[in-house]
Image (cartoon, rainbow, N blue to C red):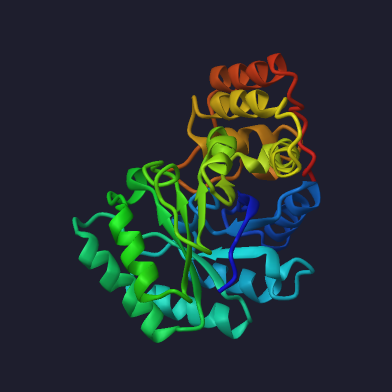
Length: 294
């Protein structure tokens, strides 16, 4: 299996005014994040409004993304509750030579570790060539991975279960599996995670912090002074005062109004919160002008 490591952005989806997916701009956004320093992106994660975007639009994007110069740098999120729809979507992605997937257990229902293992087993038994990053985010799906569950999944599927995005933060300081990627979902956990043996991060706010997060990552790898880590944490904390998707789209819409488009029930920040976010970032000497504006 191929271990994932580095700075990954949970890339934003760009929508047209009619709320259809703008495939070209969504891909351009992701590619520019890589140009800015990300090792790769996660397409159709929660930040990319995956649960709200139609399967047909996702498939259309995959077809175009398969021709991207950075094709191998993208992790494909499924963002689907249905097991059969997840499998069918992955089959199409695999046919386009994508292999890395970010998959969260289904939301809404209550279940145990054994049920989660069964869920991933059904996927892997059908698509054994897939490589899966588990998505641990109890706040969104209602389930939190235990260390034992992850260990059992890796033991059962050592070639297919290659990592975990830990947005519940109960794993990144305590889980250690050889040749397995543990990636917290926040820049504030980047340096601490690296010190604990983590492989990097996959985060929403790397849409804005790509260069800064990459510098902190590289400084750690090169054993240099970690002088920018606190600034990175402070910037993340500024965003965390609000819904991250709303805050990111509000920030990016300053330079490109297409980012104003969000699928309900999501919305932009109100004017007071927008002003406060921008002021907080300015106080941190963090560049607020989007470098990704088309």
